[in-house]
Each structure stands twice: as C-alpha cells, then as structure tokens.
Figure 1 (spheres, one colour):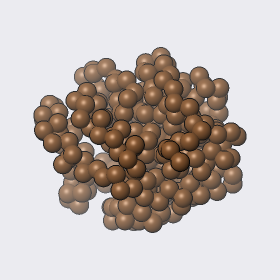
Figure 2 (cartoon, rainbow, N blue to C red):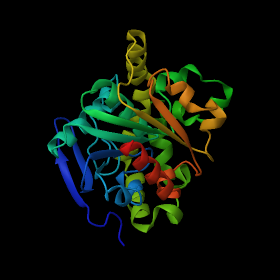
Figure 3 (spheres, helix red, strand yellow):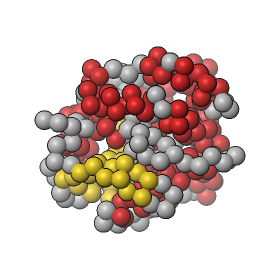
Length: 287
C-alpha cells in the first residue's frame, strides 16, 4: 500500500500562506502537525489508521516541506507559532471544519498549543507530542539542556546556520529511510537540499527564542490556560524524561485536564511506533 492510500493531496491558499495538505477519512476532524525537519509525510503510517474513524488533515507547516515560506521580518512574526496556528485554523475552515482536534509533534506541538490558546472555540482536543511550552523550556534551561538542545541557540544565530547546513544537509539531519519509507525519505531529501526551506526552518527557531516566548509569557501572566482536554505523549528513548521527568507536571499548569504517558520509541514516534501512537490518539479522541 502506498503512503496515504485513499487520501487527497491538495494545495490550499489561506490569507498568508499556501499549504500542501493531505486529507482523507471520515468522521470527526483531527489535524496532525509535524515537527523538524519533517513534513506531513511523517504521518503516512498514522493517518490511515485514524482515517477509519476520523477525517484526518495533514499539512506541511508554513516554512516546511512544500508549503510557502513566511516573509522575513526583524521580529520573525511570520514564523511565529501564532501566525502558523492562524494559517492552520484557516486551512481547517476552508476544508469545512470549524471545530476540530489537533495533535502536534516537536515544533508542531508548539503550533498546536498556540492554536488551543488563541482559538479555544475551534479546538475540541489537544495532543502535544515530545514538547513542553517554549517559555517553560527556556526558563528551565541549564547546562544539560544546552548540551542536548544546543541547536535551539545555534539556529537562532543570524546567517550562520544557512551557511553551515546546506554544506552537508545529510550530516546535519542524519535521516534514514529505515522507518519513514522511501517516498517520505525522498520528499524529505528535497526539502533539506532546498536553501529556502532550510532558512524557513531555522526562522522557526528564531521566532521561538523571541516572539513565541513572549506570547507564552503574556498568557501565563494573564492566567490563561488551555480549555479543552489535553494529552501529552513523549518518546521513551528520547530526552524528554531526562530533561523534565514527567512532562505532564509541566503541562498541568497550562492545561489543567492533562493526561499522558510515554510511547516506546525514538524521537520520531509517528514513524517508529505508528500503531502505538495512532491507538493512543484514537483512545484520547473518543474519550
């Protein structure tokens, strides 16, 4: 079976972006958002499982894959999670979904979280995978965080990442078709060898250290929290537990109804443990 059997592949234009999107299935809608350096193709094993009971929408986030690249500004606002959340809400509305569940992995978890904060009437359930809020990650930054997640700070430097990464993209991202499949691997290779995509992906990190952090801190100061049921999943063979212990303890301050558990997997759980991940999301969506 080819990836996304029975799904449509479209290009959808919203107010500030043009998004490549794969969608299919039937039932209540769920939006799946990928992380770095992936595209929607990372969900190719998860989406067909969910499509048996849900309408599944998988876009390339703005700046990633074959979606359009946000315009550069000094404050990196176009690459902020607020801007990307707005793009994704407009995408869902264009497909006829005013209210929907959303699950995001890695950088996509920040977009999903921001969507739930900024558009509470539109998000029925939130699942965050392998991430904690950016403001909390930075507030807890210590030597261990700097050692493991040094790329946050390197990517935020002006021009240097765009000079270093294209010199050897395969070495930087160390991707393999072992779990993701040949079609997804080839799609990712195209993105990683495109200088415009590399630039847009590191812009996501520049926004993270500035405007995204400020948005989180403004919400925290105002006492705003996620209003919908929330699920936190994390990879047992990645570094989330090493950095944070039980990530739900951090999320509970932001999402009072949080539940969660680890998935036996490396970082890219949608590729390495798709059945376990899909079942966890399905159980959460029907609860």
